Every structure is written in C-alpha cells, then in structure tokens.
Amino acid sequence: MRLFTAVLPPPAAVAELAEEVDRLKALPGADRLRWVLPEGWHFTLAFLGEVDDGLLPGLRERLERAAHRHHPFDLRLAGGGRFGDRVLWAGVGDGREPLRRLAASVTAGVNRAGVPTEDRPYRPHLTVARAAHRGPGPDLRPLAAALEDFAGRTWRAEELALVRSRLPRSGIPGEHPRYETLAAWPLGR
Image: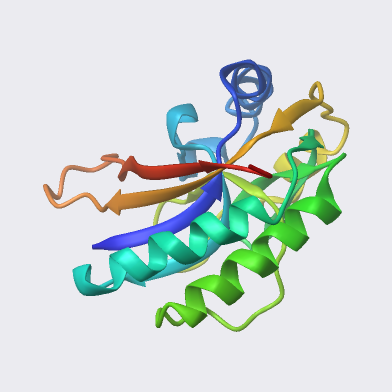
C-alpha cells in the first residue's frame, strides 16, 4: 500500500487557510491548477511510497518510538511559495525546527524498519495546488506572492500519523487522491 507519515492540521487551521486559498482561486492562472481539497491538507514528514504489508508491524513500532521522542509543539501556517511551475504551497511560521526534527526522526525510523525514503533535504510545506497538466504550468509567482502575507493562528501539533494514499483510478478529470489515517501516535507519551 502507498503510505506517508504526516502531521495533520486541526480543523480551525484548515478553515483559516481555506479562506485564503479561496481568494487565490480568483487570480489569473488559478484555473490551470488542481486544488488540493482542504481535507487532504497535511505536512508530509516522510513519503514511503509502496510498502509491503509484511513491513507494517516494524514500521508501526518505529513510528511509535519516534513519536514518543518528541514533545507536542506549537505550529503555525504562514506564508507560501512554489516549487517551480508545478506546486503551490503554504509554509510554516512557528514550529519549523521541531517539525524538521520530527521529520528527521521519522525518516530514520522508517529506514530502520526497512522502508527506503527519498534522500533530499526536508522542506516543511503544505501543498495547496498542483499544475493540472504535464508540461509547462501556469506562472505561480503571483499566486505564491499572494500567500506571502498569510499568517494563521498558532496551534498545537500533538500527534504523528501514518496515512494511506489511494490514487485516483477512475480517469475522471479532477478526481482527488483519498487519504486514510491508518494509525496515529501522540507526541511525547
């Protein structure tokens, strides 16, 4: 099954960002993006990809240990940016360093459980939109600039989630992946 680990924002933080994203959808080029549904918003800590069911018990054990090594921390959605002309994201204000440390710990645990992860620096972000088609995407600079002044309220990150991702298979344009939280562990307990 296709898995990733994440910190999931609470409904109040999602609602604040959703208001901001609704304003972005009126800007030029926004109609050329696939907007991630608010219920799918998350901070990915480690993307695991396809994981064999036989590795799940060890993976769960390692993730539980990682969660217990980190205390709950304050986190705030703030600002935004882009990855080229493909991805538009909201950023992190307060909580960037604890989120990075948690991601590093989770990645180490996942690797020890026998699940390889991507070897690249962790860049905390929450994806809000992707280019709708392959090839050159719309100019995301104005959309990213419009997100620069966004600052949500601070909230408490209190758990680590293991999430299953089910990619669309119907071929229906605009269909979104479905996410299912398989397990969650409280931080610091």
